[in-house]
Amino acid sequence: MTFILRRYGRQAPLLALVVVLALLVAACTSPSTLTAGGHAPAPADHPPGPTADTPGPSAGKSGGLVVHFLDVGQADSILVESAGHTMLVDGGNNGDARTVVGYLKKRGVKRLDAIVGTHPHEDHIGGLDAVMKAFEVATVYLPRVTTTTRTFQDVVAAMKDRGLSASAPRPGDSFRLGDATCTVLAPESARYEDLNNYSIVLRVSYGETSFLLAGDAEAVSEEEMLGGGRELSATVLKVGHHGSNSSTTAALLRRVKPRYAVISVGRDNTYGHPARSTMLRLKDLGIPVYRTDENGTIVATSDGRAVTFNTKPGDYSDGGEP
Amino acid sequence: MRISSDAKPGGHVREERLVTMIVDRFEGPFAVVEGRGRQMVRIERRLLPADAREGDVLRPTDDGRYVVDEVATLRRRAEVDELTRDLWGPRD
Image 1 (cartoon, chains in turn purple, green):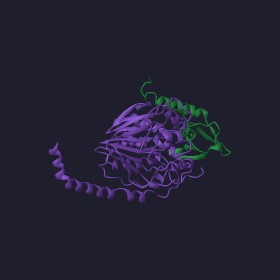
Image 2 (cartoon, one colour):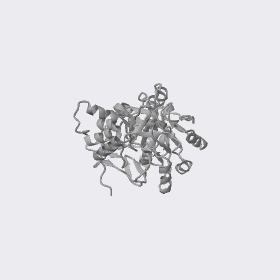
Image 3 (spheres, helix red, strand yellow):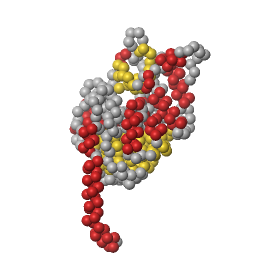
Image 4 (cartoon, chains in turn cyan, blue):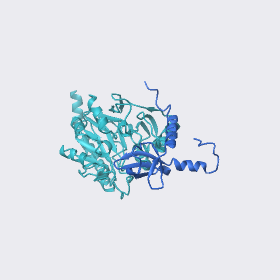
């Protein structure tokens, strides 16, 4: 033991130098370019902004947990990396296919351990067929519900093409992703009025940190999660349904107690997202909010003890009246 | 899917036109509708029947409103049911 200590003690100056160099490289490659180049003028709700720069491709490969909230406008797409393992939660709009595939390629992704289509709305599954064609995929998680759009049909066709079947996870199920553990929190029920509530909700934990990825789950599903008795606390909450007023109840926030919130939302969207009520709730609780309409692609990195972001938080402005 | 025994040229095109508009989702006062070539269009919800649902096939009417094409909707649902029959493992 003393031997080891002495050894490292002697190498400490060298170690420090390595750390400083690594930090310099990180500083040069990530945040400032992100916020500056994040957005083209956004006409509709589908502004596929230019692909943002990302942190060095080694982050998340050798341990730790890196969660990328891609700027796909008024849609969701989240890349989770840990110890060389990867998971894509949603694939943006139909029009975001190239953005999502391009981002993954730039990250050096060759194979996805898991794809999660939280629920079959176009702004969540739109780009997934392209992703399935471009990458090797091990497991596809889809809630057990269908819809009639050709967008959904394209995803099913791509799965059949690649010989993939779907897995419908149930609350309490969990799986490993590198050093992280993903636990399923929803959907609890077999039938809902609205497709949003079928959303697969995941809690991705690593060390003392965790991310709650809420899909488009609304109050109905949130209430079920609150009644489920499972661990809901999270360092980072991916706010449900683009910050709409149908999600993120005060009760949910009290239980999740997020230290940070992320909202995936399109600039100047016509739906009034994020809702004033949601933003006020987050502001009242003093929770910093990162949002793709202001920050572009958001990269959150966990070392198991704390989560750091590639950019500064956005403001609490809301999407106005729809 | 074959439409009918109607083998007239253009028959398929007509069918394509009929199933061109499918309600993907509702967002506040809007229906987000999948149009031709999977283009997403927003339609004010008040222009749709009050009982229109996600997955319904819409047909425009002459007065600028929309009705649900029940037959085309059922046909789409049957197609998707068939396509997804073995997608998930058996329910346990």
